[in-house]
Amino acid sequence: MLARLASVPVVYVRLNGQRTDAAHLDAFRGAEAILAPYPRALDAGCVPAWVQEKTRFFAGITTRPCTGVAAGARILVVSGRGGEPLNASLYAEAARACPQWRWRIIGPARLPPAIPPNLEVAQWVETPEREIAEADIVVGAAGDGLVGMVMAANRPFVCIPEHRPYGEQDATALRLGEIGAAIVCPVVPRSDEWPAVIAKALALPEAPRLALHDEDGARKAAVWLADHAAQAMAAEGVA
Image (cartoon, rainbow, N blue to C red; front, side, top):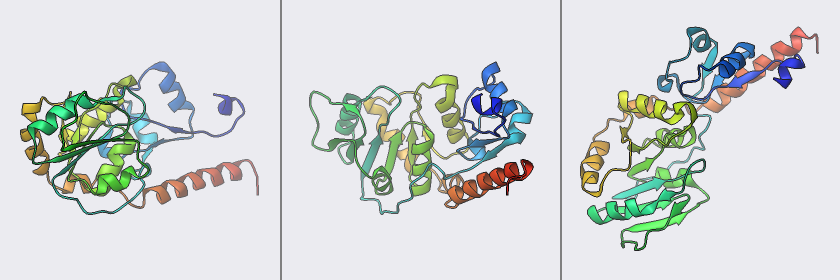
């Protein structure tokens, strides 16, 4: 609002979800353009057509690329900021029910009373993208950063969306499931449900995941933003 009052052109970053309230629509209306930091295929599509037309979608701009080889029989559970720490007790039960898999949790987590030998709780790590690239299956929420890294690494994904304002993660998870890029669970599966969930994740085809990543996305976004800045300067007669 301050930038608009100062007659400075604004590119608004639009997150996913049901953002049709008056405040969001006013921000969309006043923006020179709208940037969505995720691929068009994951958009909820519940905003008006004029907002869709004004939006440019960029896959891959929230991703730190890293290649790696799956370590074999390894499930990585990723927890992040923005919500409650992960309840590691639920994954301790899952690890006991699936002893043939090695489980590892990264990010904030509440430690269980007892940790089975095939579960490691690492808390924060320096290179989550490397951990994701070396996992056979990734379990986590539906935030743009994690989804982007999982799609970039082309890893089977079990998505458990967290509650966010405007249903941001629910919208992303719904589309991931619809296009076959993830197995979506509304809550953490029970221990006896994990073998079937794992089997379904491993059976997911690669094509939907690969279609959701653009390794050149960050450069494309930078060029697009630079073009908007150049147009704004030209309109103001700035050399």
